[in-house]
Length: 263
Image 1 (tube, helix red, strand yellow):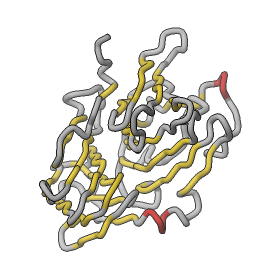
Image 2 (cartoon, one colour):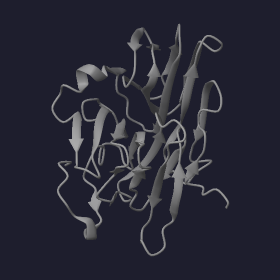
Image 3 (tube, helix red, strand yellow):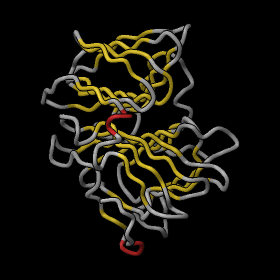
Image 4 (cartoon, rainbow, N blue to C red):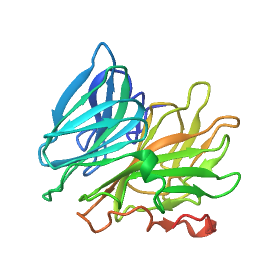
């Protein structure tokens, strides 16, 4: 079966900085994304995204991120907002794995650092959503707590065998979204659905650790295999600067309306 263009496999295939998702390679209008994977063999990178704001979300490990004259010590689930077009350097003395995302904007904001362990203490930044069999924990990292034009990012982690992004919802008129799956060692896997009509889904596919899913339209729930979680970092991009830069405000599939605790 040919691979669907909304599914990108094994984004962690190479060390260093690798942008594997972009408007040139997918149906995204704005989002470019990839991985920065460093260790003793490749301990540092310097990069910039001209005309684009950038978010860095640490998936594993620890290191530093330098933007201008500011250096931030980063660890798991910490985030850094990099201003439009600014150069940034990532370095580590051990190992680090980062999801990088960027989007075009004409607006400029300062570099900002989010310490996950501090952010999760803030109201609305750490959420326990739903109940069995659709319980998950949501960690917002770069959200309304950070000044920015288009991008928001965070992490969703499920209970074994549970659904996430449930009830099914969509936001095609306001936001693009990327899911990047992590902490799902084999034989664990999930199943990702993307559909505008359940009668003819655009995507039904297994997803594994390090796979990514491009969401430009449609409802997009997923479910973990029994005994295994489904965990993913997400990157949301407002289709206009500021206008829809918020977590929530989605359209829930009417057949599945229910209270989850997520606003």
